[in-house]
Length: 312
Picture 1 (cartoon, rainbow, N blue to C red):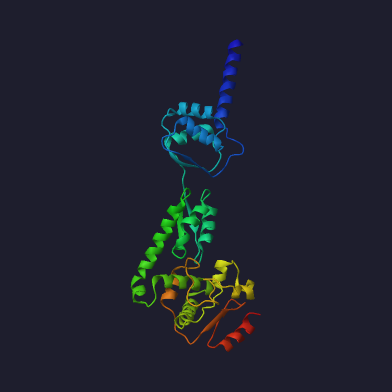
Picture 2 (picture 1 turned 180 degrees about the horizontal axis):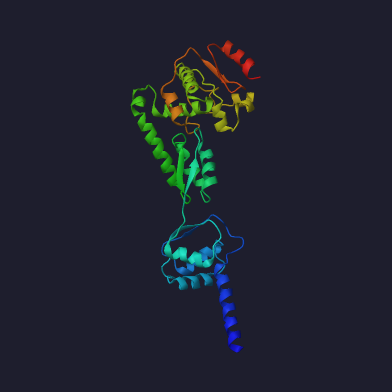
């Protein structure tokens, strides 16, 4: 009987220990990213994991590493903990460098501002630093190409900016000859494209609107586009007040002629082509009606009639 009791006690101890190795903190921070720096000791790595609530006991992690046989061989790097796991599995991943980093699909729509891009990316990458992104990308508005990308979940702002900038440079390089033969600078074309992106939809309408805006630009007529107010004030056309239109700023294309000082969004390929290859028409005015259709006019009187017909 004594031997049996001893055997049962040992079995219970083993069972309790096994459960301890399988347990994880409650609640477990799913999709948590933890960086283990180069050169840290096992004790320091354990403390980092405990503070991140990936493990509940540094002692159990050390014992687990001892069982696996590699307590001194942990690998530095960033580890993604996408779901709850026991301390034994944590130790195994540390020793074998199983980071579980995945690439995530991020869609950045045409016409996104830098701020919109930061928001889209942060929704997909759990630890993305949007403030740093916006600070570093401040001078890149218009030159971060909107597209579908795949980023590692630990992507840093500078990595993302470099990827988007490289794609923008690549796309603009495709039009290098057209830009060189144009009377417009690359900066003017990109800025105009950013306006067209917000002012019209569809390739045909974008090219017609481009022709109208470039005509106004060439005769030093105010562009009078509402899209710049969405960029500076966050207001749509229907939300603009008379005071808004009269408030002078470099981005107010009602009170100032020419283009705004910077692009107001990151234009896609279609808007860039529209800015480069405008359609010549007799039109000087346009508006997008409540029906969603762009209506053009040759004279201001025709334009006023279009307002009465399509903006009610």
